[in-house]
Image 1: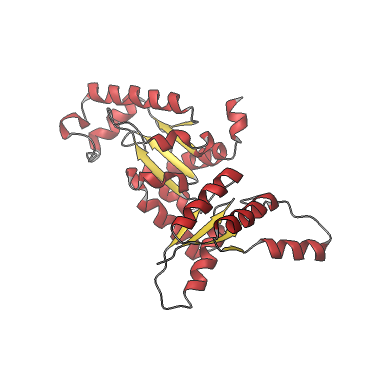
Image 2: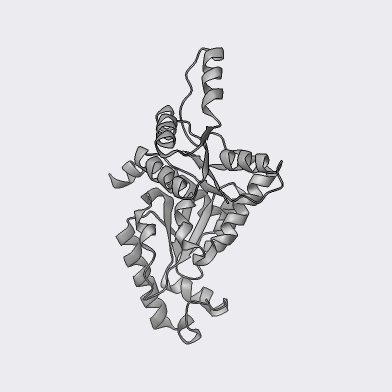
Length: 269
């Protein structure tokens, strides 16, 4: 059975929603896969080649005219049907308004007012909580990384309600994070650090983490190793950090959104 790829240089929400709305008119079960933040010609070629193998139809909402053109060319070369949901409208509006579009992805945030879109974001957070579906973390707009009891799940849910696609991964001593995590843009991965003293307090009253032996979960020496190992992972990734030792979920979320908005080029400076 064919698939539909909903592709965008933004969140992909519009392409995904339109595709699902169209499918609702048919008595058929076709999978819709969302591919957000596709912003290079090479990524488009790779995606179209994959679509050809899976006999998929591509619907897209690229703000960039260059990316729209490349999608059209790649689709023709690979015999993949591609449907441009945004381009024709942008052209007509440009003619009517005598103005050029900004060609800036992510300007429109339907999550902010759309109930169904917020539900989709919350569903994404739940399905990608605590390391689940780690092979799909590149679909997330924000990936939170930290040891157990650094509020990864509450922050994920809070940000999801604000419309962000959030995944979170636990750091466990001896367990190597997925390679794909280190390949993501640095401003999409946030390390949640915590002091040993605060972690000890939280572990004293918290539930055990399924990835950590009950024998070690509250052991001071093991927690010291966890904090050190987490710092090693953070430094290797070069990600921005949010100290969760004394922050509320709301404070941490606000800081995270500020960090995510910083271009990766500035982070490397």
